[in-house]
Image 1: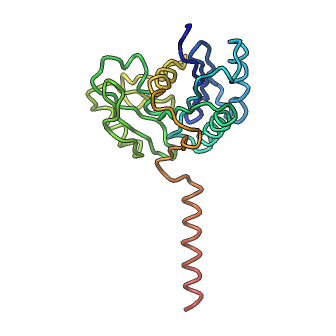
Image 2: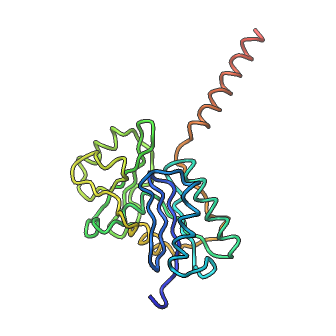
Length: 226
């Protein structure tokens, strides 16, 4: 792999924590441990096994979302910190787009990607054969995602929690190869660490609760003045 780009790719947005090195080696947390526990030890082990230092990397790629709000914050914060400390560029990867880079989707004219959005919702996005967006990332009900997937005329790639939405769904690549393919393809769009920004798509439950509590407080205040 002499001359090949050395990219560290991390994904903490999905059901499993994924870390991979383009020059060899990957980690996939099948036990669902919290990203705050498994991410940095996994990075350290991969680099040690590869006989590499962080300073030797050409870039650090990070899945910015959509997905777990807490997971996204952990992954993006870690990637930003490493890029800042090392003076390395960052590569932002859309989680759904990384699913589309599964080799089993090669050859299809279009690819629908679905991942769990929690609370009965799903995130969906559509890509062409070159993995360029055809449909922007949106949040829909799981029922809407299932209906779209069943009648879809292309490949359907999904995360672990949504692989059963219909027959012939392509599950995530267990060796993190799709994540690396996405990171390498997006290297040309590498950015400064400050521009590595989370992609949330929808409000978190905490934000909804905060707005609701604020609305209730305004109603109560209005009632008290009557």
